[in-house]
Image (cartoon, rainbow, N blue to C red; front, side):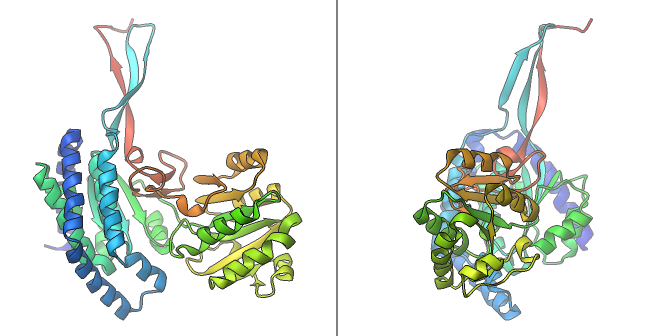
Length: 418
């Protein structure tokens, strides 16, 4: 079977399975999820062995450290993966929820019902945990999933997918509700993103190159973000201890994630007081500082920042720093150079914090908290299928509700229109 025939078969199987999972009750879906979580814990050694095969191949291929970090599964990571699946099982089922029912003068009731999207294609690089997260979210929200992980994670993804399909079968649901594309042929992606007859939405999770390609070539609607140039702004009324903790966590906890801070803005009136200790902390963590002239005057180790640096998602121990006049310039800078992902202000001034929340045009905007909180697990979604910086349908971490839509329903008792 050639790749086109294979993808057509996968698509048809997904479309057939989507009808079965759309009508499945909550008990069956939750049973499948709980079985999957148990299987993940029970088979942690199997998953680690598969992951080591992927890591060995990745090191031989010379993958960058950030990609290796995303690829790596640990005992803790596997336990967290199982926890995420169980959290999704414990969440309310959004499918079938009826809201906004109102009587009209004619006597009919008009409202909305939440329904699955149908078939969701997820394309991702390096992160095998996405296989479990995406499968669980699609399953609970009544969607079929076609998962196309990166070639570097093929063994890990196959191992996780086998456990997912085992859970579906135990619950009496079609195994094809979740399918992993079992080929590393790049042509599979080209077919997946153009199969409108089978696929309702594409969710890409990967680097800028992947997203750019899909934006140019996809004929299927997408839920996506291009990159994560996230900002921390230290206001002139920032608490010093909070500022140090938040900048350190936002930047240094992990370098290879889309919610890692890549840019730091500091109010001019407190730059001389705040920048030196913050810079010392960053330098102690091995972070390269690229700053404006005012930053370099205060921080000897800072290098000159280019215009491009302020718009860059480094995914590395590098941060751009700019001293700004105050809140107005900070907001303008973020809206100009940012990627509309996640931004935070450190300030004890309520009025300024509320202005920052209202006026910063990003999917997640925070006050006195690390940008690293911007993900589905921390937001109480159980897990996330991705982050959206779009403004239509879904924005920010996309969980169960983001994987459904609403249709209008009308309840009548024999009314006719006059």
